[in-house]
Structure formats: C-alpha cells, structure tokens
Image (tube, rainbow over all chains, first blue to last red; front, side, top):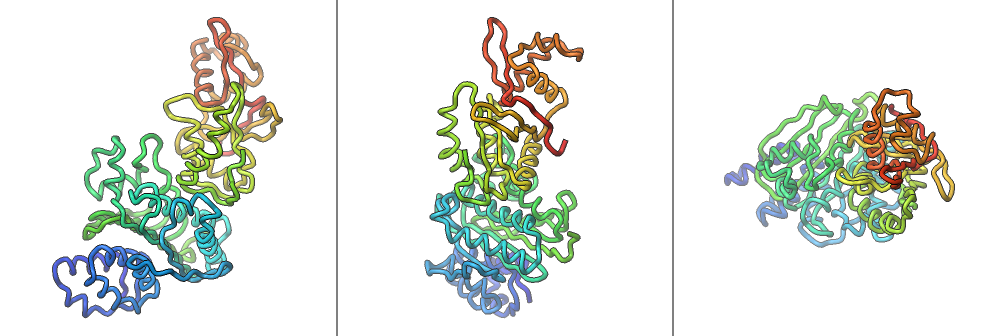
Length: 276
Length: 185
C-alpha cells in the first residue's frame, strides 16, 4: 500500500489506540514525500517504538530513511552535487543566518537552485514558473523561522521530489503549531482550535503579526494557481487539504489528525495534467 | 540603495527584515527633509510579497506617514509581484523610471490608486509647491478646497508628496517631477 498523509494519520491513530500489531503487519510499498516528513516528525516525538516501526517501513522510500536520520540523529546528510538536477533531496531546515546571509547559506542556495533546475529540466517548466515555486518553498521555510517559536536554528525538514510527470515539496517542523503562533496577535484571540487556525492562516492571511495580512500562503497558492494538485497543511489535531486547481476553485477539506507538535505542509502537483 | 546583496531572489520575511535593518534603515535615518529613498532591485529576478511586506510596508505603515520612497531597476517578474503586493494591500507605490542625483524626474504609479488621487498627483506635478486653495482655483473639477486639502494630505501620508508650512497653509511638492500610471490599471 501507499503511505500518504491520510494513511499516516490512520497509522498514528492505530498506534495511539494500541493496535500495534496491525501496523506491524502493514505492507508499505511507497511513501509520499509529505508522509516521509510527517513520519519523521512522529518518530522524533513519539519515542523508540514508532521509530522502529518507521524504520521497518523505510525500505519503501529512501526519503523516509533520510528524514528519520535527519530528525532523530545529528548525522551529516549527503548533498547532491552543485550542478545536478536531482529527482529528490532532503535537508534539515536552514538557520536564520543561512537564509539571510549568502556567504553562510551557500548550501541552502544550492538546494534551491537544484530544485529550480530539476523543475526546468525534468518537468520542462518555464524558468519564470520554476522561480515562483522555488520562492514559494523559500517562503514556507521562512515561516518556520518566523512562526514556529524554535529560535534561529529550528528543528525541521525541507524536501522536494521532481519526476517527468509531477512535483512535490514539503516542509515540516516540530514547533508550537499554528494556534499558538496566531494567538500572539490580539486580533486572533478568537481563534481557539487547530482547524480554525489552519483555515485562518492558509485561506484568510491571518498572521501572528498585527497589521497587514500574511502573504506567504497566498504566494504559495498563487504559484500553484494553474497546476492541478493537492496541498496538505497539518497542525495540532487538524489537517486542511486543498484539492484541484485555481485560487478560488480549490476544494478545502478539514479533517482530524492525531495530535502532534509542529506544522507540516506538503504540496503535490501534476503539471502535465494542467494546461500551461 | 541596492537591495540584492548578491541574491537573485528576495524571498521571505527574514531576509526582508535583514535588508530593512541593515540596508534601508541607515539610509532612511540620514534622509534629508525632501529626500526620496530609491530601493534598487538591480540584479534581482524575483521578489515575494513577504519581502515587500518587510521592507515597503515598514516604510509605508498603515497608521502613520510614509517615508517618501520609490523602487527602481525592476525586472518584469519583480514589477508584477510588487504590483500584486500593492493591490493586495490596497497600497500604491512609485517605480522610479528616470532620476538625477537630486530628484526623480519620471515615475510610474503601481497598485491601487483612485482616479481622483491620481489626478491630484498629476495636478501637483504640474504645480509643485501649490497649496490646496491654489490647486482648487486651477482645477476645472467642482471640488471644494477641503476636498483638495484631504487629497493632498493623503498623498503626503502615502509618501507621494512632501509638504512645508507656508503661514497657515501647507505647500505640497510631488516626490517625482512627472508620474504615469503603471500596468494593471
């Protein structure tokens, strides 16, 4: 079976309710990028038993194996070559210094450049559109530094995967989640649930900063506007999925997700199915 | 001032805050009374809304008087993002097209601008140093001096005009000698 974020929610619920044997018997063939990063967050916060379970599933995905290593150890990760256009890549979240200082964040810039090159060469995407998606990924990583409450060296993961047919990128952190972040702003004190917080932040531009509305998620959704795909946002005990194409016509679905720290997002798009 | 700092892409609040504190703010503090901040995007291929929010919005607060400023050296993508950002926040902004060491001689207005606001700005460009009653006298519009005062004060609040006291009145000066509408109007 494929382990996607919905199936992972099911697995986490089964683990919570003690049905460990069911999970031991599960045959995992593939793991989506979003599930790899959320799985690593689960392993990093739920203890050795979950880590062992996910390590048993990791032969199905090299990215899952890398994500587990990145978030549960301090081992050095392998980077792709400077001029490659890799099919996938995963790194730990860069620090604030790496984001703002080109001489400190050389690896981060190479990572973004390889993602851009992969979009252009593998998917034959226009350079302008690829730049927009790379900027959107950068925005999502910047959000971790700005809102997760983890300081200037946050604990989190960033990854992308690009084939000739589709693209995916994901960002996951183990911070305080969306509700706690939004409630720093007095204008958001009415937001009390994870579901309301996700909806407010992603579709209404709510921000922990007072004044002008947040722009990061709207930039992301605009960068993907004409791409058929699916966006998943998870925080606390809720998940918001956006399906379809276009800013206005994406279908938003809220669901429960077993509680877990942090904020995890993943984006999947099929440009070949889209008219561009 | 150059904002790129060697980056082709300016994205994110963190980078915007960094550029504001380390590049923009020192120049802003040294700005002369009728000086205009020119934010150059030379070499930048792409900039995001968060970057503009951290820089342009800091210079143009919702609840205060803006610092007279204009962007310059925009690539097509940066111009489009700037315009989208301004419209999304119901702001307007100037792109300097031509300038000397002492003035912006030609600028384009981007973002959300009312016709009446644009006409007031054009009238001011044609009559720099005018007071509201003087512009009212020159205008064929049936608009009261109070309405002219409001329009000019609004241009000043948005950083599009300087003003100086002249007795009991204010004299207003545009921050660019000539203005055109940008794309998207």
